[in-house]
Length: 243
Image (cartoon, rainbow, N blue to C red; front, side, top):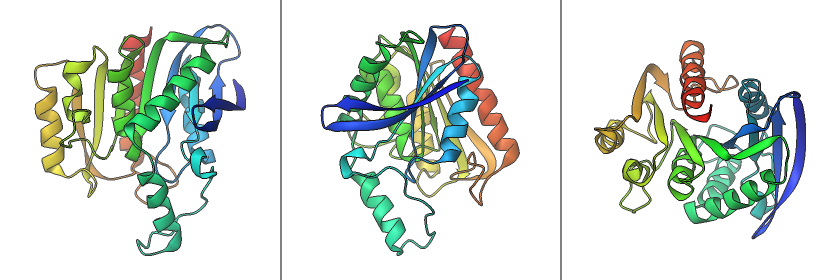
C-alpha cells in the first residue's frame, strides 16, 4: 500500500488529506471517506487503509481545516466539558454546501493522479458525515455509484437535501447502517429513511445490540461482530457498484 498526506486547494483554503491505495495496478476507483465529529486520527487512517487494500484510492480529508484544526485528541465524554463543546462547535460549523465544495476540490486533485479513476466513485460517512456521503451521491450523480452512511445524523430533515429524500435524486446505491440505540438517529428517524428508500434497491439496516459509534475499535461502545458485519456490507456495496 502507498500512503501519502497532501494539502489540497479548496475554495476556502487547504484541506490536509490522507490518501491510501494499492501499490500495483490501477487506476483505482475513488472512495471519499468523510470523517466523523472527533476528527482525523490514526483509527480513521487504519480504516481507510482497510478499504484501500480492496483496490480503492481512498481519500480522507480534514473537514475542520477552515478552523485551523486537524486532530482533536481524546474527547471527554462529559457533554459540558470544553473538549466536547469544542467538537460540537466544529461539527456545527459545517454544512452540506461547504462539504460539496470541498468534494469538488477532492475530485479535481484526484483527477490529476494516475492511480485514481474519478469516473467511478464511492462515498462513506460516519456520524455527522453520513449526510455528506449521501449528498455527494445526489450532487455528483454522474460519478458517485455507491454511498454509505454509518450511524449517520441529520438523516431526515425538512430540507430538500435531506438524506431520506435522496433515492429520487441519484442512481447510486445507498446503504444506511443504523445503531439500534442512537440518540442522534432514533427509531422515528430511521423509519422516515426506510420509507424514503421503499421500492428501491437501497437498504436501511439496523444493527441489533449496538450503540452510536459501534464500528470504531477505540470506542467503549465498539461491537466487534457488528463492526465486521458493517465491513462486509461496505465492501460488497462497493464491489457491486465500483467494479
